[in-house]
Each structure stands twice: as structure tokens, then as C-alpha cells.
Image (cartoon, rainbow, N blue to C red; front, side, top):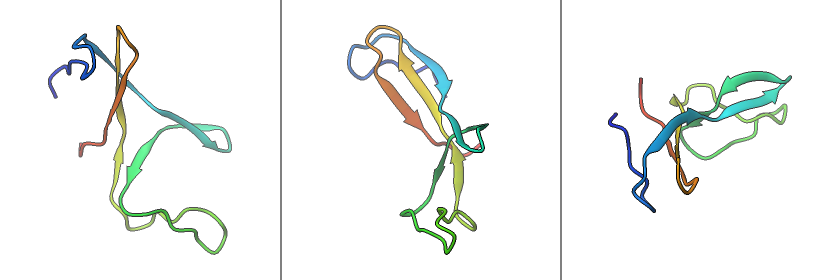
Length: 73
């Protein structure tokens, strides 16, 4: 992917990621999961069998605007 420009101010965007610490404080890159969230019997969110893509974030160096992308790798 080419280096994106900010949609708001046209400055350069810096690549990063969203860090997920929700499960026993273990650090993972956040992911996009297909479909609407569904609760399992145990109260967790069902993810088995659904498409999953890691989220890449780009932050504007000037105004701080953030864009998220979930591309197949």
C-alpha cells in the first residue's frame, strides 16, 4: 500500500497498529472480524469460522486524524 495522505489536511500519515490487551493482559494486534458480533453461551464473542484481518492504523503527523485498514495479508 502506498503511503497515504491525510483526508483532512493532506499531510503525511504514519503507519501503526491498534494494540489489544483485553484477554488476560496479553498483547495482540487488534483484528477486524466479519459479521455482527454474537455472544456465545459463555458470554464471549463468537469468532470461530469468521474471516479475520489484522487492523493497520495510519495517523496524520499534523492533525492526528486516524484511518484504519483491514487488508488481507
